[in-house]
Image (cartoon, rainbow, N blue to C red; front, side, top):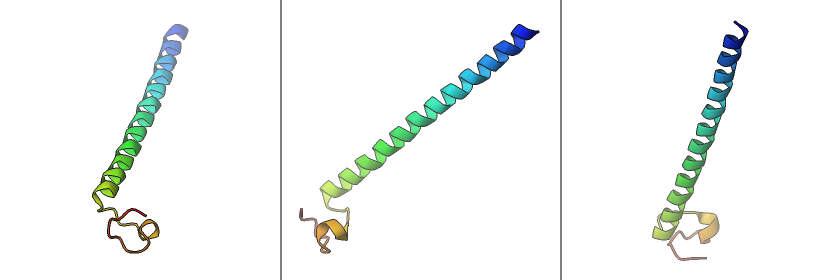
Length: 62
């Protein structure tokens, strides 16, 4: 009886750990995707950022 509950507890702990690891990996992947999207937009000149473009948004660097 004791060993069974112990095994179940261990299984739950392992499951939680795996879940948190997968969640972190998914979060990291989402962050990378977001950064990549911004990079692509910046390179193609579609990423309009008045603060960095000097308010012109013409796609010229600086």
